[in-house]
Image (cartoon, rainbow, N blue to C red; front, side, top):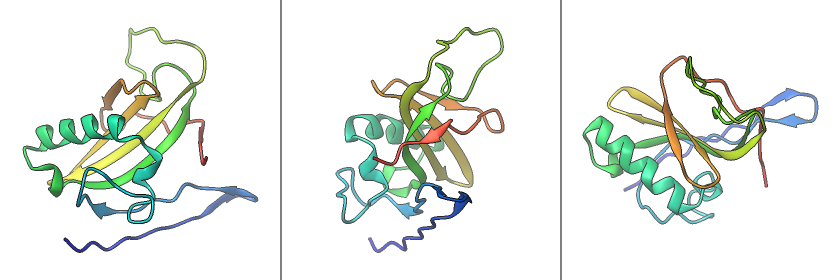
Length: 135
């Protein structure tokens, strides 16, 4: 399957680079750094369950999903940037991942911690991470 890759690096503040965002259909579940540099930021054991969940929610195959964002992130607290009213969260920064997937006209905003536990953040309720992790 041929794919068009679109990458953008923009400066938010002098010297501060925004993460690379690549929009591409998912041709395989074993991405390589050369073919899909964005996906390589997320270990397959963390990305695969998120893709499986997104495919189930959209009722399509994983190959039809489009990853809009997949990057390591530093979340401000245990809510992973998606606090729900009435819940209590760890008040310490949490290393994790931010994955945004489009399927059938819907956008799915997933947030994960470094162990792979993830949540689907409802549309309009999420905050971006305190900072992306580029290494």
